[in-house]
Length: 80
Image 1 (cartoon, rainbow, N blue to C red):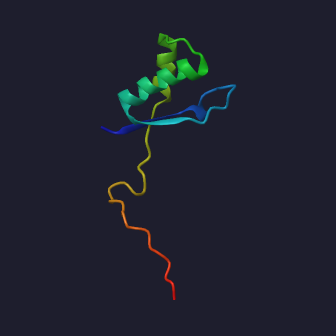
Image 2 (cartoon, rainbow, N blue to C red):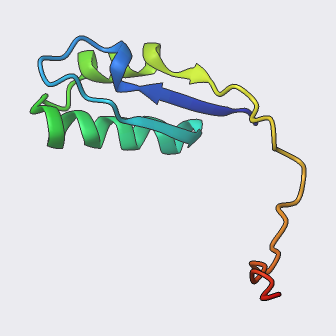
Image 3 (cartoon, rainbow, N blue to C red):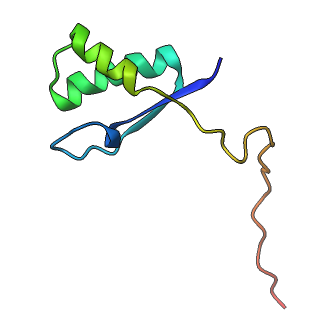
């Protein structure tokens, strides 16, 4: 299943919200509804859900996806 994203910057808003939510589609959809209600004062309605569903986009693959992160100890400066 592909990951989805919802970016508040693409929605009409007086607050200029910059929140972006990404994850599995159902997670993003539910989080976006909660955010719209709690942060923007929208009423949870069929219209809101339809608008949010229409704003979900496929998440662009990250350049580092699939490569393990290096967990190296920080190097100490040499004392010569």
